[in-house]
Amino acid sequence: MDEKQEKSNKPEENAPVESAAKPLAEWSFPEFVKYDRSRNWFIIAGIIIAAGLVYSVWTANFPFALIILMVVVVYYMHFVRTPEEVQFAIFDNGLQMGHRFIKWRELKKFWILYDPPEVKKLYFSFKSSIRPYLSIPLDKQNPVELRKTLAKYLEEDLEQEEEPASEQWGKILKL
Image (cartoon, rainbow, N blue to C red; front, side):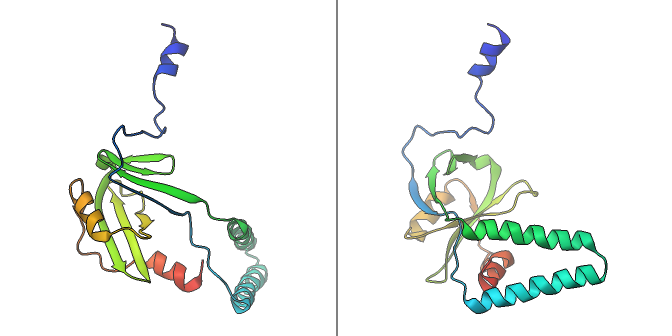
């Protein structure tokens, strides 16, 4: 067999792995939360951006001005986008999120924060310290059933009682 044929028979490392089994649980959720922002929010954001630009020009810190402008462009591109629906499923060999499959061995712990209507989320921490946590909205899922299912595969982190600070600030600032 030549090298080309051998490569085509090997699965791609980042390709999603499909489980032959039926999902233990599955649901979909929006890719991100699209907040309703008032006119005042945009006025305050504009003032902060303008103040940052004036300060960067006044101090001759042009890289800072460039960073501010890049953040504004990226945020605007995010703002005008409509969130896509992400399919999420729990299998006996890992998690499927969209086209990405995460094996149990990559994950360290899970925890569920359930305080409706404000907080209904499932979190996973990774074994790799450079990867952030994974946050999954629960939607209408039963947290008790999910806890039972996930406890078969991962340790539950019972010390987590609040949303991560980044998510709290995101809600406050509507980012």
